[in-house]
Image (cartoon, rainbow, N blue to C red; front, side, top):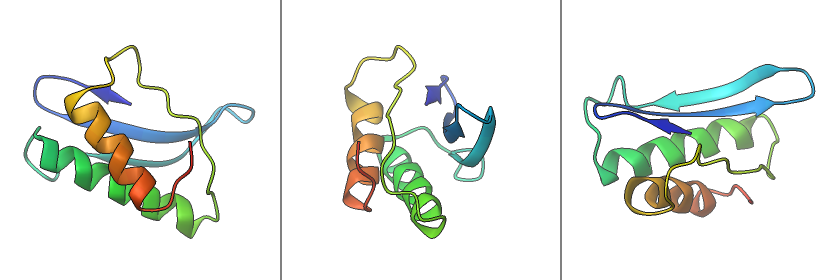
Length: 83
């Protein structure tokens, strides 16, 4: 999970293989709002579930668990991810 002033990024990473499994960002969505964060969380969860991944660890990258970060996490949980 990373956010800048303009964009948000979220990735599923396999630490053992040092590989990115899936990612979602706000680059195509043109915004950095709470609604955009929810869309990113939902999109990432759908990609994970399509790859039969249900359980993940949420690393908020040092950002406070409020606002957009919380919205992304809640949307991912609602879409089926467990963390």
